[in-house]
Image (tube, rainbow, N blue to C red):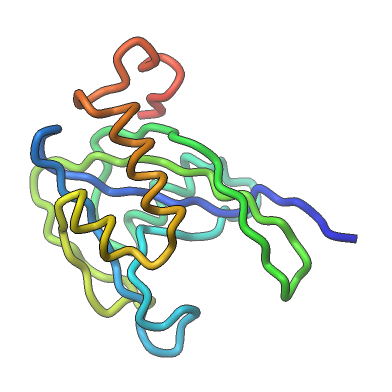
Length: 154
């Protein structure tokens, strides 16, 4: 029987101001799943780890960056046919300040800061474009406004 699991996080790393945000995209390296694909920070939630903790860990591991503010945005389902599981990815927007020099982890070969329209054009997964629109709708003024109390994690 097909199972459902909350088991991964997607983190949209952003810098700049609302009128000129840039999104960090990472290109998958050789020998990894989806070699050559452009994506946001993505990773598994470890046993005993909360999704927000996984988001912070994955951002550190894949980019070397620290998070100044973290917002939960949505949950995205996807099907892993190899293990017959509907995986739910908890999706976050992470804002970084200061030094935004990226130190890549072993899974990626390139990182680029792109404008939101350019990031939407570059990402491999169509759901990523939809999430960027959600982020703009929810956080377009730089914070979550009247829903800050339910979306802001850090």
